[in-house]
Length: 187
Image 1: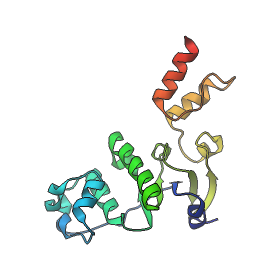
Image 2: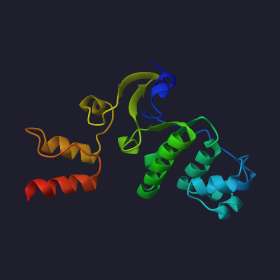
Image 3: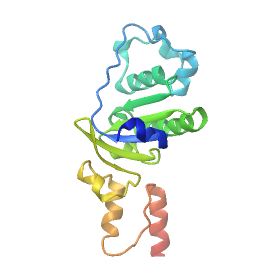
């Protein structure tokens, strides 16, 4: 099965694989050919002051956001290395943006990353790719077979450890929900 076929049934998918960006431009951000660049900047969490920034003066996080804004008008948006390029607050904002783009604008989104945390609360399906072949796919981030290919996020590792003998806590991907559940069960 190909990614195209998986995208037919899922709006946002996570791909556990390496991502190499080929995005390059010279000069100022204002030189990018993007429709309504001010609105696009705002959508990715930047302001109009970035119009005068030079490519060489942008941070990794800013470059990631600039690359995303060049893809906003496409039907299929492919992004990668979100976990290593953005801080937690920006990653959570981008997840909300992807959900909005998917629901309101009917965009299909592919997030390519080696870190499963990038897919939590956003991806409908996770696919593992090796040598351009799909070797595993799941809709459940608690699927143990997934972690034969990628590292397990700490929250899932903790829940799996606590529940190894019997169910002691609910399966959740939200740390605050996990804490509430532990508190309810202890008191």
